[in-house]
Structures are given as C-alpha cells and as structure tokens.
Image (cartoon, rainbow, N blue to C red; front, side, top):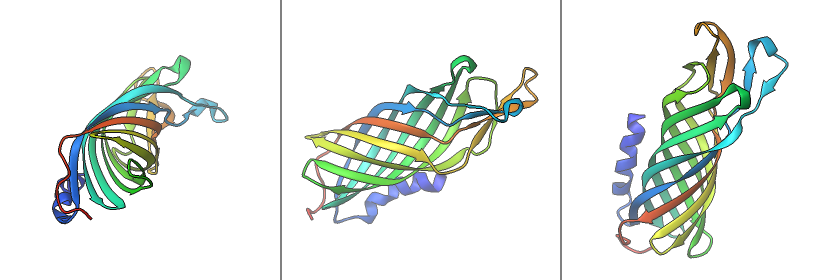
Length: 200
C-alpha cells in the first residue's frame, strides 16, 4: 500500500507533456456489501440493505487528449444494514487509478482498479477481517462544468474477503459476512488549478 501511495505522487512527473490538473472531491456512497452466512443456518443467508456513506479525497488528472489518467486518494465510510441483525460500518483508505476517454468535450467515461486498505470496522459482533488490503474495479462517467465535475461510478470488489461474526461469548465464530464492496458512488469534484503543461 505504501508503494501505491508513492505512485500517486510520482505519476505527474512521468507525464511532462500532459495537461495536469489537481483538485478535491467529496460525495456519497450507496453500499450493500455481501451476504451474511450463519454456521447454524447453512442453507439460509441474509442480504444487507444499501445505506448512505460518504467519501472525501484529492485527485490528479493527467490529460493526453482524448485520454486521461486520474489517480485519486480518498477516505471512505461505508455502511450496510442487515435488518434485525444490525449494521456493519467500514472505514477505509482508497487509491483508484482510473483511465478515462472523452466522448464529448465535457463528458467522459472511465474505468480502473481501486486499491483499498480497511482501517476499522464496527457493528454486529464482528471478529477478524480476512484481508485488510483489497482490490476492486471502478467504472463510471464524469461531466465537467467549468472547474466543477460531477461523476457517477459503480465499484465491485475483486478480492475475496470475509469478516467473522462472533457469538455471545465473543469467541465462537457463528457466521461470516462477504466484505467485498458493491456500491454506487456519486462524486462532486473541484479543480484547484488551471491546465498546466503543453496542450495535446
């Protein structure tokens, strides 16, 4: 993960002829994680209902028209509700590395991997998480309106990842939750600088 963070800051220097922008971003996540499987109910599983979370971060855009590269760094809070069983809340750091293509001057589509590190988890009686470092795929579209941008994307986790659910004694494992992200994300971004570099 440290290497990924370093890559985020080094990428701009590798594209000297590109138009470089950087800015801030924030928005909402509609997360719905995976199923809960209980050991004593092996034939039955329970899906979580989507709840609203949020994210805050920064980004850099390297434009080589009509393509662009957009590495991002953000904090994300996600929550899913499992009705009578309660909620699961996850805090994580994400580093999406997105490749985009401009369809029209203000409109583009993009896709790319998202590298994630889970900071903490709360809810139910959660035990250990299988993996803290995970990888997912993001795909979406972005509309630029001056210095502002509005984006919609879908994210799905690739890395198999589970969180154990503990019993009343906080020792025995009574079930597992599929912790791979599956969410819709709406983002508002603001470009902090004008284009720099040679126009392509």
